[in-house]
Figure 1 (cartoon, rainbow over the protein chains, first blue to last red):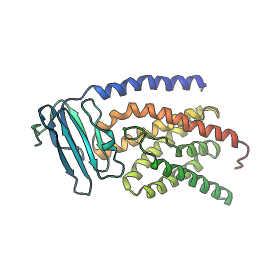
Figure 2 (cartoon, rainbow over the protein chains, first blue to last red):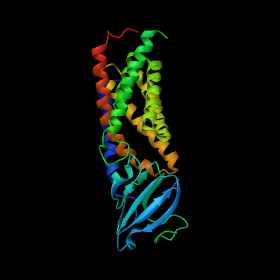
Figure 3 (tube, rainbow over the protein chains, first blue to last red):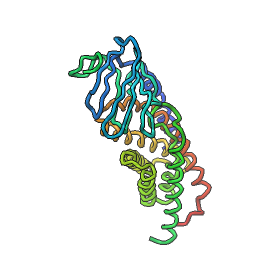
Figure 4 (cartoon, rainbow over the protein chains, first blue to last red):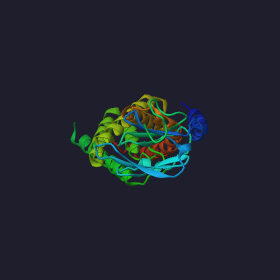
Length: 125
Length: 166
């Protein structure tokens, strides 16, 4: 293939993905933080109803400990004992479709518009 | 296997492994999981073009197994293997569409495929598709880093051409 064709392919990919990445970071989320472990929701918090920030420790029973910080309208992992600490480095999320993920602890924190099924979205079910 | 070939594979595996381990020591470039330079792919791309698919695959597998041993976790092995395998398949499939002056494109395609493999493995382990929302930003970063590492492989290949006897 001609070099020009390759350049067009990659330029087009960037042209599509860059706005999409931006949009996913802003849109699509809600203010209910659903915390999933191993694909199952373990906790659901309505961030709009939080008036004072607090921390919560999640232990998976296999030695992975994540400390979650909940503030009015935002959530983050403030500490984790895994070596990569990707979840901590992801920082605070306030909305959008991008989750906080901790691979070793199989933890996914998503901001969604409604609580996960079976949860009442206050301080956890 | 001739001694020469065995030695060459060993040296290239050591080189790829050194890059692999070195890269793991670099702090994350961005607060997004999975963004990394992918230096070890320089060796894979070069070996694929200069030595052929079999030698490239042998180096890749040895590097991933040993690299995960150093990282010390089974999950690291699963991700590396998923990413490395998909990267290799994509690079191999597109090998005949790129000339020796377009190896940068091979690097970028490999990097995109590598990310896709890792995202697939991660979403299976997490039992959640949520992680795919990182795909667009990872694709952009894969193109940037992949062109860079592919270009290095291309320049190395141009310098070594004719000097590497089979």
